[in-house]
Length: 77
Image (cartoon, rainbow, N blue to C red; front, side):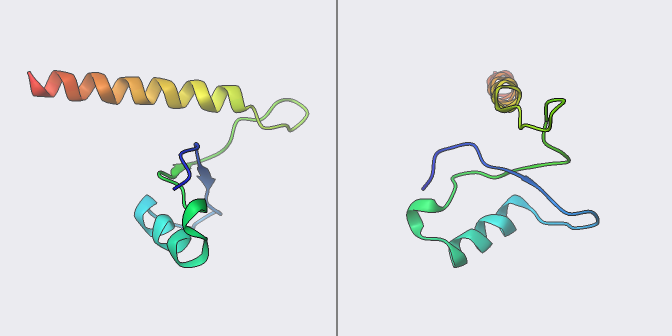
C-alpha cells in the first residue's frame, strides 16, 4: 500500500465514499500503488498562479490527525 497522502476532488454532482474509491483502486491498480487512505475534498488549495500548495495540504492533514487523536483520547477517559 502507498502510505502517502492521497486527496481527491470529485466532479460536480458526483458522489463517492472513501471505501468506494479504495475498491475502485483495488480493481484498477497494482497492489503497491493502492493508497492506505483517500481524503475527499471540495477543492485543493492553489497559489495565485495555480500551483498546488502541498504545504497547506500537509498542515491541514496534520491538524486533522492531531484533532482525531485528541478526540479519541478524550473519549477513552
